[in-house]
Amino acid sequence: MIGSAIREQFPILNQNVNGHPLVYLDSAATSQKPRQVIEAVKSYYEWDNANVHRGVHTLGSRATDAYEGAREKLAKFINARSTKEIIFTRGTTTALNLVASSYGPSAVGEGDEIVITLMEHHSNLIPWQQLAKKTGATLKYIPLQPDGTITLQDAEETITDKTKIVAIAYVSNVMGVTHPIKELAAIAHRNGAVIVVDGAQSTPHMKVDMQDLDCDFYALSGHKMLAPTGIGALYGKRALLEAMEPIEFGGEMIDDVGLYESTWKELPWKFEGGTPIIAGAVGLGAAVDFLQEIGMDEIHSHEKKLAAYAEQRLSEIDGLTIYGPKSREVGVVTFNLGDVHPHDVATVLDAEGIAIRAGHHCCQPLMRWLEASSTARASFYLYNTEQDVDRLVDALIKTKEYFGYELG
Image 1 (cartoon, rainbow, N blue to C red):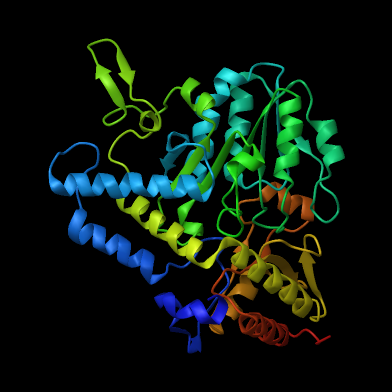
Image 2: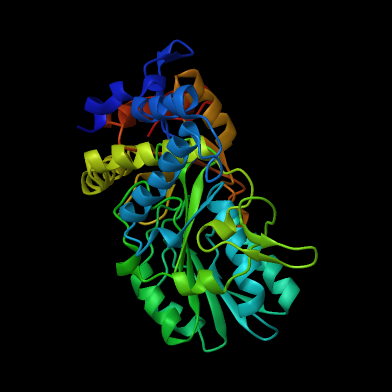
């Protein structure tokens, strides 16, 4: 059950936009939500709404069970060793900032190195810039190949015994590049560094296994994997998390509070101060159930075929430039149509009922490397079909006509 067979599970897709059936090609920004997730959140608010870990009454117990049950589901989904290694956050951005702000200052000092790439989302760039400024560390970049990929040889040469943190996206939100995380983790560990992985674009689209990848930290967002907005998680190896100090203080994360000193709860709660995102976690648990029912291997295969078909069809349009490698593991295809500004392209496509992303995609250093101020991006998920790609191509041809380009 995938592609056209699954669309009925997503109520938002069954509508017309500007007089045309909606084609949603912006899942890299946020995914749509199936009924199963919507109903789970609705049911929580209608039947179980209460704070967690506090009351002994029935609603409080049910809410706590649902919240912690979602943590258990996510831990199994990414093959963490323990639920203690799963910290609920607002999303990938918060998770990465937590690592940079809590782990970073104790691990990085003057003269040390933090290694990233030019294609990182700002959420996996700016926290490390700030950490380098505060500590006197050096920010280093693994060079990119012409197609936006990196080589392990370049990684070996960039990561040295001065490197303390390697931070990299598993999948680029612009180029569609999938990085060899397991091999990069091995290189980092040989040099005494930890690896922090931005999993925002990988977790929804392929099977991920924390124990196999051997990454030290892994951040993810629920809203990109069918769950509500405002919920995500940080995976961290237990020993690292145990040694880290919380960066938010208040209710829920404390063990004992005195007049001048306080102690913290054990993992994972010491990092979850205040009332947590309970409904979001419930929705995330339902999203995990939904994805597992379909199968991550089937989702990955479907997207890979769609990306190949999209690249084939888009390459038929004269004057259209596609960025990134020829072969993609996920459904992200970024392009520009001649000299037409990406925002103009997106506006014309929207008039045809087609939703894509246009802009710098929170990757301004990468845009400069591409020598483009911005790009257009079509991103696919389990509910997209080849017919969606055909609609995109037809609309882009209309866009060329609209702006007076000769057709190739």
